[in-house]
Amino acid sequence: MNQKPTNSSGRESLFSKIVNLPKGTIQNRLLPAITFIILIILWELVTKVADLPVWLLPAPSDIVKSLVGRNDMFMHTWVTFYETILGFLLAILIGVPLAVLVNSSPLISNTIYPLILITQSIPKVAFAPILLIWVGYGIVPKIIIAFLVAFFPVVIDTATGLNSPSPELINLARQLNASKIQIYTKIRFPSALPHFFSGLKVAITLSVIGAVIGEFVGSDVGLGYIVIMATSQFKTPLSFAAMLLLALMGIVLFFVIALIEKLSIPWYGRGE
Image 1 (spheres, rainbow, N blue to C red):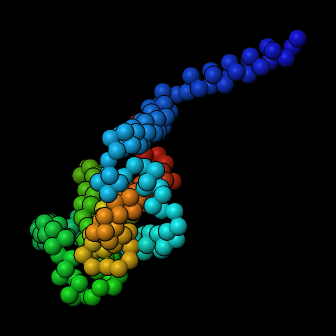
Image 2: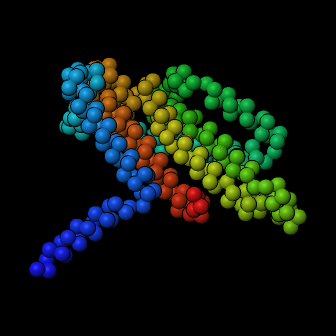
Image 3: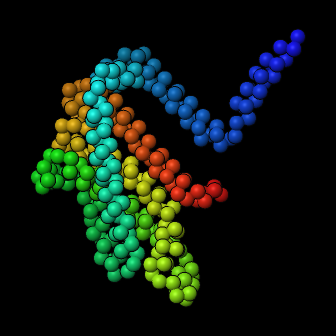
């Protein structure tokens, strides 16, 4: 007699938990996931119903099948990941001091900024063959291209953050006899952190692109190489699989940086 009400209340409790999810949870998590699943299903149905050739547009199931038995994909993924991380770290090691130099003096800023813009105006695909002539076909040119693509947002966003404190606050610190190092460590660097992490989130995804550009031009290993090789042999499902792994790599690295940002500056964005 007492069992039915218990089951009913349990079902009602589960239903109420789903229905009463916070609006932000539904918008930010459930809806994107549902939309993605629907798009995958539609993609699968369209390719099967229209009987499209696999070499033209493979179905998601064909893409998954292309990875079965490909034990070498982990090695190719690791190589691209390694190139991406090294280029990204190099962008930080060079970009942050460069941003400090840009911020320290208008003369230095006016001298360095045009050079930075010139490096970003050169298409990296056009520059990659020259790098191969200079440093060979190893991993070095891929790291350099990843660095060249990634360091621009690091420099620009960090320099913007270093300039973000109000002039009144800087003048007050100077009146209190704060040294230049103290102004940077106590005011400018903390104020620059949100901008710095914004630059890192852009830079890490661009670093993936830079590594792939290097692999496109000259490589026999890496996910970029897999894309070129598979496309030339009309193995389109394998090419799509490599692109999927690249997308997942970029997404995971982006959220790793976002997590580090949240742990480093938990006070930022609380009011949003």
